[in-house]
Amino acid sequence: MARVLMKGNEAIAEAALRAGAEGYFCYPITPQSEVAEYLSKRMPELGKVFLQGESEVAVSNMLFGAASTGKRVFTTSSSPGISLMQEAISYMAGAQLPVVIVNIMRGGPGLGGILPAQSDYFQATKGGGHGDYRTLVLAPSTVQEAVDLMMLAFHLADKYTNPVMMIGDGMIGQMMEAVEFPEDYKEPPLPPKDWAATGAKDRKPRIIKSLFLDPLELENNCWILDKKYERMKREEVRFELYKVNAKNKILIAAYGTTARICETAIDELESEGVSVGLFRPVTLFPFPEKQMNKEARKKNIQAVLTVEMSTAQMMEDVERAVLGAKPVKFFGRTGGVVPSPDEVKQQVRRLIKQKPDSAGRTKRN
Amino acid sequence: MNLTNSEASIFTRPQALQETVTHYCPGCTHGVIHRLVAEVLDELGVRERTVGIAPVGCSVLAYNYLNCDFLEAAHGRAPAFATGFKRLRPDMIVFTYQGDGDLASIGTNEIIHAANRGEKFTTVFVNNAVYGMTGGQMAPTTMPGQVTTTCPMGRDVANVGYPLRVAEMLAALVTPSYIERVAVHTPQHIIQAKRAMRKAFTYQKENRCFSLVEVLSTCPTNWGQTPGEAIQWLNDTMIPYYPLRCFKEPDKPEGA
View 1 (cartoon, helix red, strand yellow):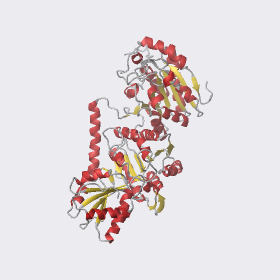
View 2: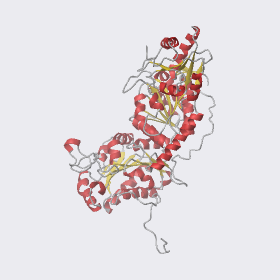
View 3: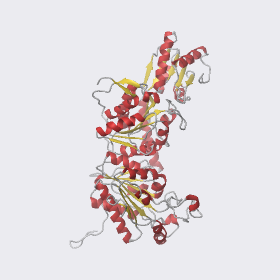
View 4: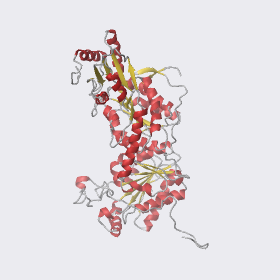
């Protein structure tokens, strides 16, 4: 297929259809409502299920019911809506159901604002809902990558029978870029859906539940889930390096739109004779710990600079990855403010002037 | 039991009911209601394409008794859950089985909107005027003056309002549906309840409308009564406030 110019939200919607999504449930919220608007036309045309629910609480539980059929289903929302969905996400993780949830993040906490942010990092990667579970979290930095990861998300959800989240800041949803959809999309084989509720014909009834009143049974379920998360850590870590080389003085850690801003800063710094590399996690859970540690340990790296559109959330994972090998510094803008390349450059220059072992965070300016 | 040729079994366990020991309290009518659902699934021949959705409450373990695929929803969310399932599998028979804490309190939003969208599933709504599983707290359906663990002086309507009449509330929606309230405290009422249940599932089978049967039920344990007293209390206190009748049918929007 030729390249087409598409808005991020619409591209995400189309990608889900290309990946075989059969059902979509939604509740309007800025800045991602274009996904629903696009699908409200496309899905009925294709004979697929589109439904606008009465709340995100209902929508996520519709998703829970729909996923029990074994068909590919998904929802999209933005930060406050995703908070309301945490109940069902916890249940679906406990009941081991594959679903895809997209969070086009806006500034918070509370009602916050409607402009791009990355401040749901903790919510996405550290649970969000109650109980011993994780969601696999993918973070695109371009509209094309949003398309590719959206399609991958359905595969990973089926592979692990676990909710998969794709988180993009509002910029990813609202920006228009050229994208290409795969011509002949094929996936590696997946396990049979022998858990789906299809009617107890010539077999025993199937039960889909997250309730285990016997603590030993519940503990067992938690360890089954944990085993999957450990497998994700072994098999699903994804990241990208940009201009990482032996001349780098600073290693920047950033994801999503922020990583692209950092790339611009890195290009400009390079032309000014300052060498900086970028480590961009693509999976936020599992976090590329070992890989980041390896890059941070390299002799030429004086410090790691975490750049976020949030207040030092990913930084905690970066610190955990770097394990004290190098100082980890932070620069961020939040609340819907997007950092500029100039701001990033200023932080890098300041950092290079400092003694390598100086402690503390570098807050905005 | 072995029967001779001249004998015929006239009462057996429905196929849709599993052979197991009940966890429900003595005098609780959940068992009767489970059986009615099972009989209807058998009679309509739909057990093998039915999925039940359990609530949070005493009947959270309904899947231990009914012999069909069963899914366990979050508290109050069974109607949203059922919506998602049925939309993806309109060829299947879907029912939710919910108590009054589940449906009439935490899940009011979900049941109203599912009914208003005209979702083609059936809800069996068991109203026993109290939170059973958590130990007898006040429900939206608790009767005026009724003593519970969270209204030890009796429900004060000046403070917390009057009991919610779910069947009447849902029947007020414009969207066509089948809504009936029944009870299961006497054999005659059980027969009526069965008729309503069968009608509800038939409307679904014919893909006609949303259907809900509200079943007045007893909870001797949390009412602090004997099973006999509970039946009397249901009859004397609940039925005058919760009248037993069909409130709405698709062909008769004004009610029967």
